Image (cartoon, rainbow, N blue to C red; front, side):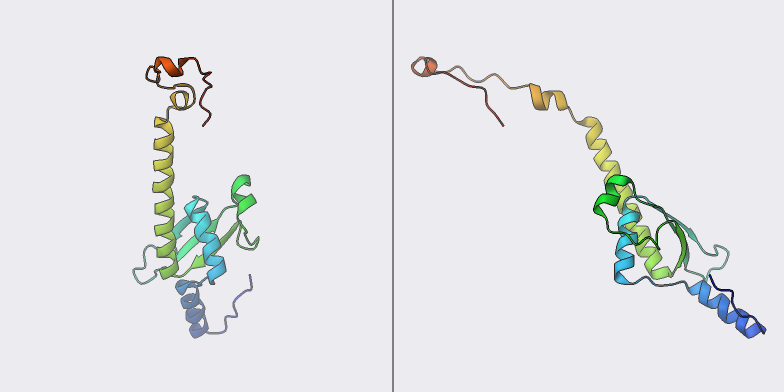
Amino acid sequence: MTAPKITNIGNIRNELNKYKKGKKFDIHQFNQIARLAWLGRVVMQPLDPQDAECKSFLVFVQEPDELAAHFLDTDQELMGAMHIVDGEQAEALIQVLRSGVEERAKLYEDLSRSDFYFRYFYRPKEEKVPESSAAAPQGRDED
């Protein structure tokens, strides 16, 4: 990070305003961070919670798990770093993060109710076969 050149109060205010506005990611970067946000690998906090005019957020992007990293194409410059993101993109990331948590929670709820035993080992008894076809060999149904 470069040190801001501070020669007068005006420059200090300009630098501060630049940080308060945050940075917009390009489409490729935003999509990468949004995917990680959906996975819950993003930590967000308002940049200045005491300033009502400051809408930007501090965003920390964690490395994805190994399985996710295998499928996701991520820029290493985004990973493991803190970013100051503008308010509009931060709000979108919050929505993505929320929907990811909700969808993963539903997946885990469904998983906790799944009965794998009956799915793989229980076959309902078939109706009695008429006598004429009883002599034909019957195999087990293969799904």
